[in-house]
Image (cartoon, rainbow, N blue to C red; front, side):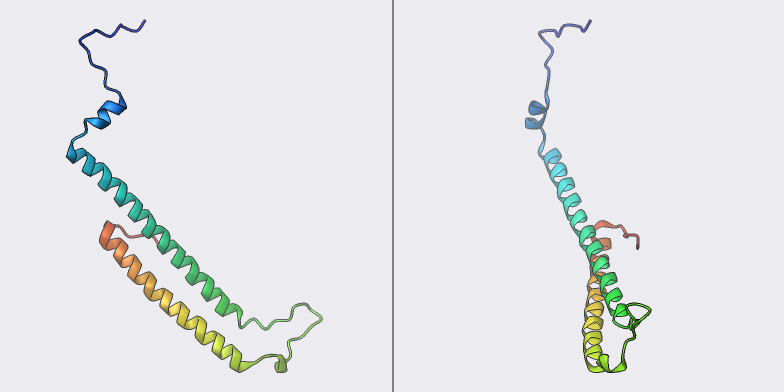
Length: 121
């Protein structure tokens, strides 16, 4: 059987323990929570940038897929517009380069702020 609590013993539940925290304990808990939130936001932002970059590279590569839709069809040279391909390629290439720069900056900031390096996929 559980021993009865003596009248002189004080039971401190989580409410009272929380109310009696010191300023140092409160600051540490808040700092840990904020640090975790910021690190998570940076990590997810970097993962999103990496995904967007891969997606744009795939789109640019797929622009040059002139293979027929089936074995009975052909892509006619007259159906390919070189000028529009040039414009689309240039736009995608600029977007890719901008994402590469943004990603490099964000990875650097993540490392600077957290002291960690995210593994590349």
